[in-house]
Image 1 (spheres, helix red, strand yellow):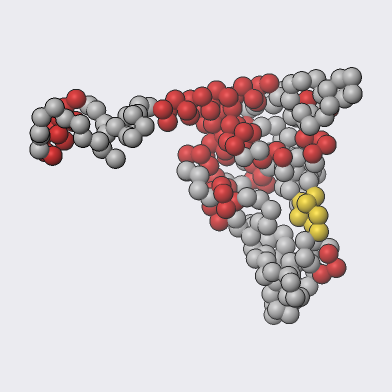
Image 2: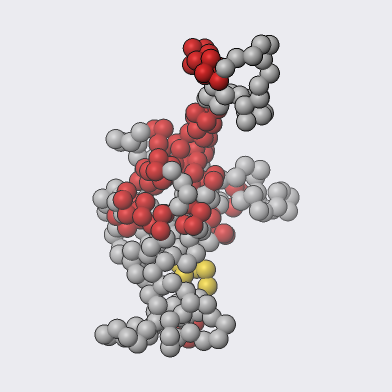
Length: 254
């Protein structure tokens, strides 16, 4: 809100012209100018932190043809803001190296050496089992996907940027891994499916949307800017390929 504290009365038009002439912006109630460039400086620092994290963790980035700023920003969003590796590694015990696991005790009672370090052998390779979801016989387990790029250089099963953006914006499961159970299709879907649609809707079981990813926090990611999503995509495209992960065929890295 503009706070007027002038030495002499001026018209609104005069004040507006004065602002333009001096190159000044409206002063907020905190006393900071709206064009003080803090946003640009914050992103610059995010880029620096993102690149430093990748280097300190020993992630061998493929920077060929990639904008270093986008790689650094993507690293920050994935490793700091999003903690994507917390879900897209094979599990908490494998997310960090033993000496780099901050959840463990320090010597003499534990192996943590005092500096956190992720495990490059499992980094964003997927495979974490979140347990059984409401399904016939409890057979459906949600398992995190392998996000690392394959032979094509595109991440998470050769996703294009458009597909990656769509997933983060809408949560759509492009693999259709666990659709809703139903008898209305031909053939009927009665296995490897989520409960929720009649007649598979037992009391107390909510109507899960089998077309959506049920664990990934896409409702939060969908509010990110196009640039931020693109930066995440570029960073994932730069990390080393890992074998394994649900739905991935052997030899995806060769």
